[in-house]
Length: 111
Length: 115
Image (cartoon, rainbow over all chains, first blue to last red; front, side, top):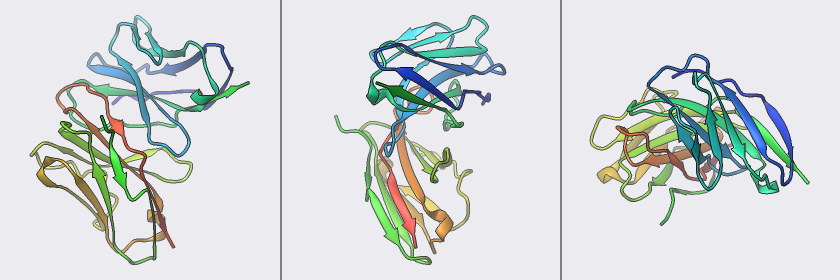
């Protein structure tokens, strides 16, 4: 699976949009981009995933650049409960195997 | 519906003892994964089950670690002769299958402390 690069930490003001970047410059055509987050003392929580089109669900939006070498997870109105470590992961289509987690971005939402 | 359930939530054991950790996946999920997370570290893949296929054991750190999945549902991770470096949170996840891109859903883990 392609390696991802994320900033180790970010701050965001409560109520503002949180934009979390991820670089995956070596991504191949058969790899999806997944985002998970881990709130302290809990297991990772699935947020969203996409291949090449932008995606939106009740939690977040995922913007993938046209060349697919980077993406941005957007939390439109961050709350204190969104404070967590956010992981960007690429996964081969139909790989039948595990996700490989990197270091992630520690997002701190501040009042 | 219920999510992935793991038990116990916490386990303290003495060095050298064996431990068993249990995972109940989401009903209907055919793929099951075990990970561990040491304090302040990322997630480390251990083992993966898909249906009746032979499990992918490539992440198991030593032969003291083993896992089984009975009836394609519940899984047990066993650590024999525990060592202090085995202390970690052991996380289980399940997904609908492996031939699609269905996301993994994680439990809240078992925190293992080896004294």
